[in-house]
Image (cartoon, rainbow, N blue to C red; front, side, top):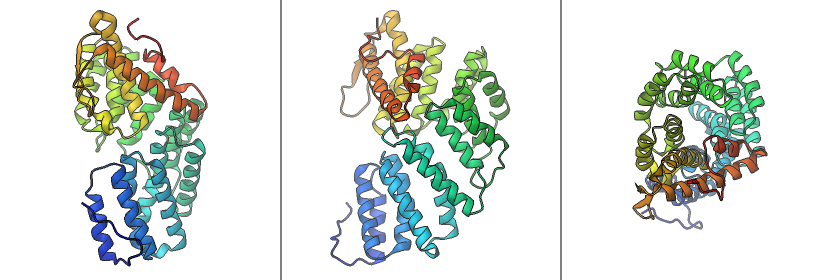
Length: 371
């Protein structure tokens, strides 16, 4: 257990390094974030600017994993303030890492409906300003603006940023050669350009990195189905699924559930629902929760409509009964998806996610999925 340090005491950097290592060893969650904050506050009080900067830089990933987006925003603002006030304490490697975190932050922030659009725009403004002042180009900014516009339900803006992204020159801030096509395929999937998505997938599916080809193939599932290439869809699903190893893939699992729902393979879909339902306990974001829940409802509703609403489903989540039924789980997950869609749409100022749920046959709140 990590020791508590009284603020009135004077702590050496060695003391705080030991406390920071203990905090880092804690399980992910709010308690870990609070302990990290405590150590960082003490470093600030002791005037250990370099130590505090590095601790905040490392802590941002813990804040994201715990869903503490406001903590991440504050840590990022404090790091930027240190960079501007005392650039000598920031190494070139730390500077580049901070810029990358800043550039890609909106991709994470947009997945939390409590983060206002103005906050996301402010992060983009900061990222663009710092990239330009550091000699970087705008390729990564255009890529992330396209992605965020899609998640805000603004397809016109997304396509406008897409056009800028295609002609911009990449640099060290850009995503890797395997991930860039994934962003484009998601754009084509979301905007209904299914043939274009399949064409790019066929050109890119051999590319690999830590998240590829799982992401690009998962986003290609719907385009393959919509263009009638069911063989391509089956191959994509088989290749993509093994790479999904933890809760950070809940969104991807949701895409696979939609695929099984669309192709009438609800039995296989139910296997994935049971296997990955426990991941909801550690969901990285409300968006990931909503995407998994809506995909699962699509599968469960299909089973209920064919007379299997009373079938038993294993529920491996903590704090719940070990078993439920297809119908009851469908009700529960539909309620979760509707609640989150309403919160996202309220933030975004449109009905993008409610229409997305309707397209997945997720019943609106109050509707019986077995009717």
